[in-house]
Length: 167
Image 1: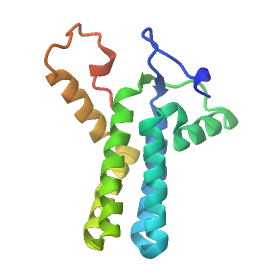
Image 2: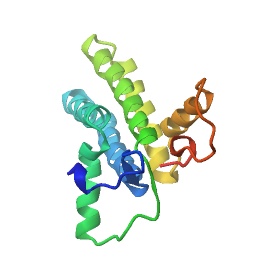
Image 3: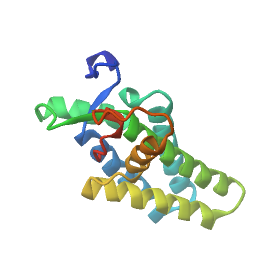
Image 4: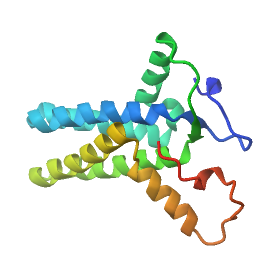
């Protein structure tokens, strides 16, 4: 799976810029459905989304369930080469942010703070919808800002992790 993906000169994963928007669209559908139905089924959907975030965060985007679906559809529908690629770092960080907030939601459900849980789901839903509809990835932008503010980093101007491209 991962061996088919493009790598940069340092061996870092490069991803098709359309992939994160596709994944965000699926995340939006999953979490919007969860928010509408709520109850046990809604919480199960949030748990599924937590698993998807965890896989993408811990194993990398090469193993992302939605990324793999995107690559399958891209081949089947012959969508052609990516219009651009970007480093994995910013979108993977955004997945970690989603994982953190989804964890807050699930823990809130578990301790009976249901309203707090659904508000957390709403936050992830809003940010996913923003990415899916506009291409603006807030988590990616936070990653890029953090890289720029990191003390001691090289400022070559050609640092792929600080280009500021949105997913």
